[in-house]
Length: 378
Image (cartoon, rainbow, N blue to C red; front, top):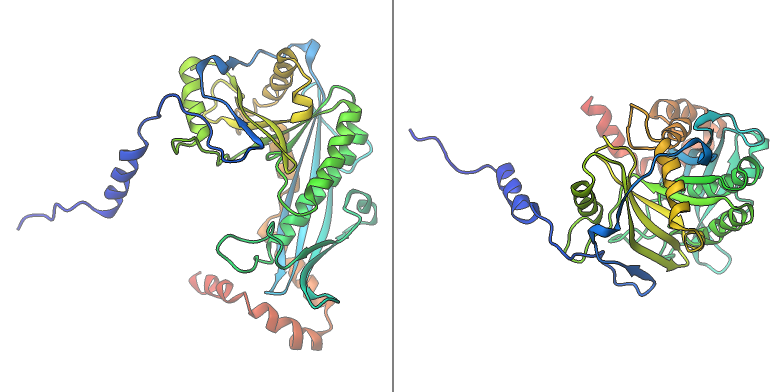
């Protein structure tokens, strides 16, 4: 009996991808349909080797990142644990911040509430685990009307309420980082946030602007490094992948940066974009943002000193080519699943038991059926 020679679905999937994605088209450029975005053709003469950072030009670098984990959730409320951490590197050595806590912790509580005008809104408040953390958090509660487009998930009528813990964390990253720049970084230092300089939620642009004003006043360069990049080209390719391929052809054994490629001038994202491979043996390149107002005023030589300092911080063997400062703040801010369960037990114990059984538990059951299935699978 002859063996079935039909191709399996996995092989067919692979052939479909190979048919469309095994080459890059020349004369490509970033895809954009926004008049507040300026894009440039991808050309080899925009690829530059990153110079070594000599001792005369070593700068202090500050890094900030946050972590978040939901503790209790329902369709109409959420309580999350949040953590924001900062790391300071002086002469490329990690040092404890002097006037700023290495990390702050807080709970965020979000409720969907009926307002006086009979409209619905998500209201989020901040509850620091220690009173001294209050000055590093937004002073006002966050208020998002239910129809706010910045919180809407595409294809869904309402946002997932779990996102508001992450939103609270993002706002706290900006306020903590503002204090960190103000107290820990001196003139000529570099600030690096995990992710781009893009702001997406209502009110976030204003809180980011406060940080920008502080940094510009102190002459601290504001940057952002993104682990992932979803920008595409006008021909449908991954922009980061195309630049990585093109730049590695020119500098196969060197660290490099690519510029210019993309400038964004809209209020929600004021950035001059670079792409960087920060270590010669790295398999990764990253989107790297510099605050546009600052990027316009620095020379190519000054820009290379900024990038070379960050490259100098990117030689950790655990992740070569990625800044150790961002690895450090990720570790400091991370919230594990294991630490959330005790928090959940402690939090439930704070409720009046009768009220919990009658009003809270039914709300939790509205969204936790999937968790029960996960337990059964084990």
